[in-house]
Image (tube, rainbow, N blue to C red; front, side, top):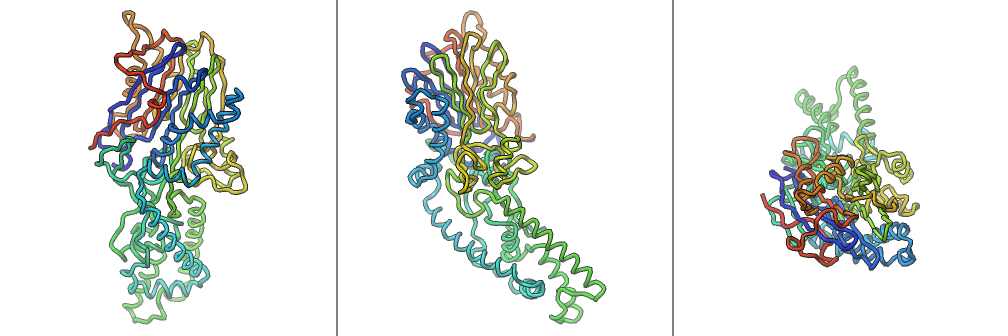
Length: 538
């Protein structure tokens, strides 16, 4: 089913905990997605004065989300600003610091292990780079040829070469993904039948391998090896739906020689027709003088259109299309982190996960969803050399504008990290808590795409009311919320089909219930990490 399972995995991970000043409940569900890519932190005692709660929504894989849940708490405490009591600055510095770490060789190796990518993939990428260099040289040569020379190379010799693939033409990238709809993003996961590993990672049936390079390269590959779309020779984009990440190109693979570019098809049709008449090579791809001018005009228009498409595709270059697939480059995560120290609530957010506080029953957003089409985000993206497509994706790939990881979009060497197309710099909001603030909700967009902030606050408020003097565990309320948000099927636009992770924190201990008998209180480090249990295989 591409990005989705045939049936949703409704098994939930849940826990409750707290201290003398607050209670929390947590629950997560994989849902329709082929893998679970969310992670979280519930740490009521980050230090003697501070609690930390966070949700990470991964895309392109769960590795960056898991890495953040494991290391970001310590990275925050390491910041000088944190030691100086400047929590807002500490969060900003910590987000940028952990994002920078992801580019180091040591961390990349750890991300590879988390992702479960095979070691031989590095060698494969090196081989593909050699092929790409060869193709680049050929493309340069073809770009300087006249029309007649191109016709001679690809028109007259097409029948001879149709079944003879060029060296490396069948090389394809192997990485799959989420659409993270998402996770649409960088290819789809590979196999839906494998059992999840200790990180809760599951691969699913493929939405296609990533095809490297521009449309022009895809066109040439299709003409020589038949690896592209039979209709126009260009590799088709995969039909993955995904919110979180860069999409890949994929295509059905007809028999070698069966697919040709539109340009090559026109030439060969003309060639065959004239060969039947007199077999003259000199008349290949030509007609009577009266038609010749018209054909030239059509060819010129076709060439101009292909050049424009090629230029646009170069601008839309996506992670994995250059053959370099690397965790942290073609994968990333949102991060919404809340610190509570005394009566101060400090929330940092990068991406489209969200934190909402209930104030006298009214929803108060403590974070801002970062979307590429927003004016501030769009300006930064353009200044960094990027563009936003009509469907709200950066260079046709990622559909959010701030994230940790995704270093494919952070390669402008002139600009600092906070000014890259995709920035890890969080927005930070501060709130002084009082008796009007009863609870807050932190969740990924799997919740917020289905319900508004106010709808979630109303949902939780209604269920916090005691029944016969008994309070419900907060995790039970969240589990009901997840079921409420789950779509009945995947026939819609993807709403209700995403991974779902949610944390509720009550500021008054008498609200909610922390039942020791049902959930053993965990150490802070035990509350970190991936949100999924082993996924049921279909």
